[in-house]
Length: 623
Image 1 (spheres, rainbow, N blue to C red):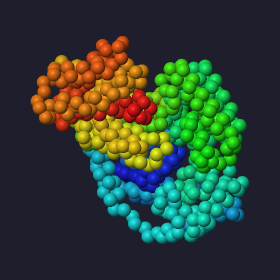
Image 2: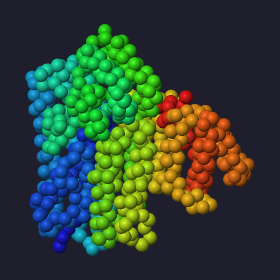
Image 3: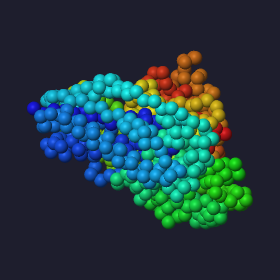
Image 4: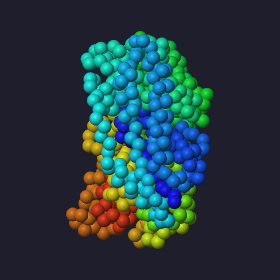
């Protein structure tokens, strides 16, 4: 009799959520994806008749994007499924141990950078959480039952006693840092010594010794430099920093125009004189920039160097300690000339945006679908979702100057320039619907869709906070906005955090005409950025929104429309009055349709969206 094995590799919290750098997030996610691939391959090796129930088989070629969920269900014909699962777990742990050993040999084998064997083995041995369950294969709801059993197993956590004395890892805060020294001064000296040794060359850790890592976080940080990951090494390029993501679209605009590109090239020559070294791997960090401008030297520098504040003496000394501080003022003047050239030629952005976006996407109604789907329906949906994740979703993110961290199943996590996040979300939702709409649906199950959470965060703010905010926004899109929705959290450096959302597709209450809210937002951003609409328009609309909502005094729809159009026209330039009136009408249609779908929302929510539009149009400012 055949058996099902539901298999899970974690922890997600330890490998992904604890990341403080984009590179750590990427490698942590990729490692879990890679180990899951290895687990699937090992099951098939031990039982050639094994067949994957869920998800669909990962692509044969390894990608720089994590593309395999960290859990799966597989059907075995072997008489002892538990024996097979035990062997697979052992092999998975051995694969991770091998990666860790390569990293240790590359960076931690010098006499003055030795690490205690006991410390290293203790932390690496406890790094992975592997859970699995076996159960008899049934003819119906196999996936649903298997995942329910796996969820129950995960609730029975294995609490192994472990002692982590001394100073803790500056990234995860859970495990002892590798020097094992008890005072910060000595530990800082140990880490500086590691970086100064020949073995420390190429290790991406802060040179001042204030970044002290445990074995697990060290493996994630150093695996690329040690070439320890099969199929993912230096040729894949570095993952872009938050500053590189935030500035990506500005860099593309500058390089597309001869005069501004020449000015930027002059600035790059100043960076070379400063002693800031170019990195060829950075040229491919943002895929679209790498394809469109592969030969441009500017792509070989981190995006933080396109912000004038980075060239302030204290910060430059902190971030680039080997640079020639005497020439910093000259470099800053040259960068300001790039800004001036951008304004002179009326580029969309005079300076790079100071905010970037974290986008988290998750499927809706997928659990309900697979709970009732027959085998053919389940296979069709799994295949469609896999194709969307492995090809379409990544292509969409890349086209918007973003970089996908994870794209597997109906989940996606990506970083994007702030102004590209909403168009990207809209395109993802549309293309997902097209990918699944031809599939036969079980009776009583809604067509699956996607919900998207977006966090807009300053490029120098804590990365973990932005990741957490994107996940919270995704949850709100499902719960507050009834799925098939997008929710945005704006994490301002000062002032109150803004939260707003809408459904992707709405219809007018009178003529049943389709409305695309994010396209209305895009039009608003364009008008605000060009000056066709004054920056005070969102403020005026927000101030009137409560009265216009009818919550205080009942207000007819036409009266509300008349007032909104008047506000829009009043704040429009002379040659944009008609466009402003049309925008005002669209905003009212959106508000009425949103209220018909979610009675607690309406024009007040739409007015907040206009505030977000202004924030995006101004590059991260409410002014």
